[in-house]
Image (cartoon, rainbow, N blue to C red; front, side):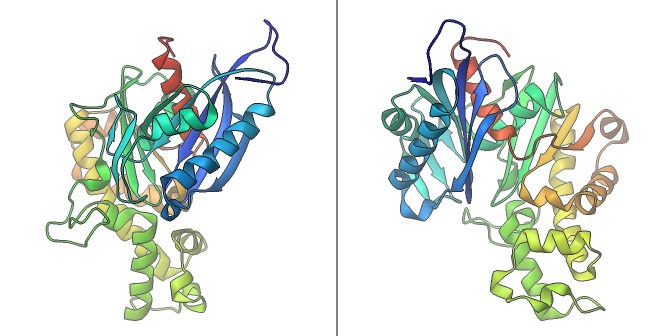
Length: 330
């Protein structure tokens, strides 16, 4: 499929797609690498079913492709897992409610372009390795804090998938035995404490419990309408209750990250996603919590940094996955 005029001198493009629990992002990335262009945003609306979501993705891909000059050679898709990459299938994803969805073939049929899929957080990590905050790290772990808590591991410039494509499921590692119930059905997962919905839920509970000395700005809102973004914004503005909630989420996430540091000894940990918008009110407690729990030598060797491109690294990484699938190096 080509977009615009097709000439030998025209560049080649990959369309990167980032499928989140709430939002879709689609953009064109030069095959040779570079910033995404013609970026489009939409709602995933996963509750309508995979077919409806794929139709929306297909429409966005076609619009993006029509706006760039040159040949669009394929589509790379980042999607929550677990996945079966060989069959390009989403096996199960709690935040989308999909099971056994052949997403790769569905998108290929919809767009008439070759398509590959990979875990969305792994794509985020690879995007930050390729062009972001962790360029050329030997071992990079990327963590996304949004509707869920995802993570990806990049070793030597390639995503580490594990024996069954399940490596990097940091959000479902247990930090509190018998703790809060997670969307996956288990208890005590990081995601039950540090995801966007978990932070919003904890803020609602904290308001009901009256845990802060001073009244919270969050108390002026309809409790059911409070989002993690509201909590993070309130924390950034100095709201005591919101800071307590964010601190608690950071503390639980720090437990998981300290374990990652002990297990993988990474040189870079990159934090992204909507919840990371809390900035220093998240990153400060997170660093302190990790330092308190992990070996000092391993902490010194690891840069804990916010994502350079939190909005677009997932798309860029999905494009990088497609590029690598063609045999091209990054």
